[in-house]
Length: 358
Image (cartoon, rainbow, N blue to C red; front, top):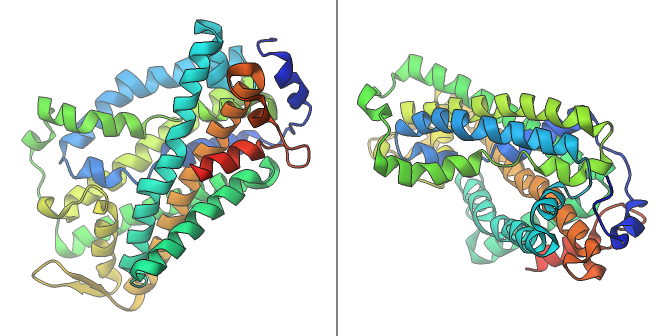
């Protein structure tokens, strides 16, 4: 379906079909499962799990079905921009797309970098002021390079992120079981799972935030092989995987970390460190955790996995958001020079660089 202007048609020939079905599944798992908000949901108590189930039914499922339908009916590069343009016109679609795009560099340079630095200092070494800036810049610019490279190569970053999530969250959940057998767990009362108005206000934004991302592969539809079958296949499998990968760790945090010690940003980090003491380490009466032996080794591995997971979240979202912005610009909803696709790499280099400059 011809929905984009002549400016985009000049760029279309530079795209390369690099995404297979399994690539899109891993891409979605990487973007749907955000490690930066697990602690935020757990910090609000057991009702966080209740709201996750409710929103999985009333939001996540219909949202996935809607995006699957749009992605198969309109398999055009820059999906969300194109869908909005068809419904409301180019001007509204352009404004919508700018807002969609701008959130990514703010998020990568904000909470993702902060949590990555906190993880590094918790499990490796104190960075100091200069070290914090240096490591933070390395974190951000590694993501820039991963997004700027060709999708044939860059797609392996979200794939690595999805695998890191599966291994990290799976190992954490198993470790919680081992920890519970050895040390016992905190009792969770039925009243704690009861949804409340206060919980609705505090939790629903986080849970909805966790449940968004189904549309991202459709920003690179013309770089997929057989998008009409790939999009719904990937949405179904990644959606089920995301619910499980969120639910298990959040329940684990609630079972092992005292409620007054669950931090919104560091909750998952603290819980990881605590449960890993079953492999070597101790927890003093004040709650300070010290890892030794195998516990320290596993802690280092988990910390690396968490940092990789955070980095790949930013890369995955950037790959999608930048492509949609480039399509919008090439279509005339922004400066056309920003819509330029690299003939060598098949990626929107100018949008990539501008995004990180923000």
